[in-house]
Image (tube, rainbow, N blue to C red):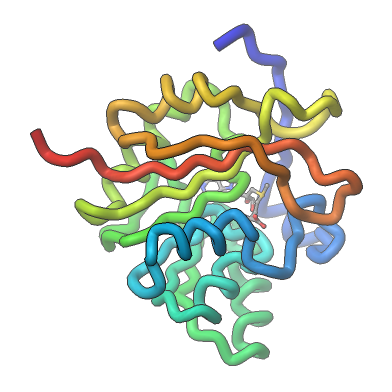
Length: 206
Ligand SMILES: C[S@@+](CC[C@H](N)C(=O)[O-])C[C@H]1O[C@@H](n2cnc3c(N)ncnc32)[C@H](O)[C@@H]1O
């Protein structure tokens, strides 16, 4: 991976206390089309799902609405509280928890982890912890669906960005990479930023 530009991220707790959630660049009310298509491809329609770094909680709500038993975590308590209120108004049952994936207190195991935008706001030295902790939260046949910015995104500001080979080097062999494809990051920006969508799973025991 070539030398990475230094990127600054907010104090997430303070950020969500003040944010107008629906105007956030990553706010997308529907379940990501990449996830919908993947769940269909994998014939995966039920099970325990974790929305990791849930932010406004829309992806957790989307997964709950189609039948998953969802836990949603974010490092920001304010984000989780606000998302919980929205979900309760929509009568969606979700287990909301403030949790830092780098020091996670989760002990459950999941069939599916959707991580949209959390990985690309972590600094490079945190990535091995992230990979180990995510792998530890997946069931033996569980899937990780990862969405990050792509190196093809031309706007210089924003989160870290990755090429498919970067993702392979960071996540493999802890997780088996099934596919990585170029896509967009749905949200409130026009045009949508260029993104990668990766499907991974726990490797078969040797
Ligand atoms: C770009 S936002 C994406 C939010 C949400 N996944 C979505 O797609 O709407 C990244 C999120 O990661 C959360 N986050 C950052 N560092 C985290 C960490 N160490 N553990 C858990 N969540 C974290 C932030 O609070 C923020 O909500």
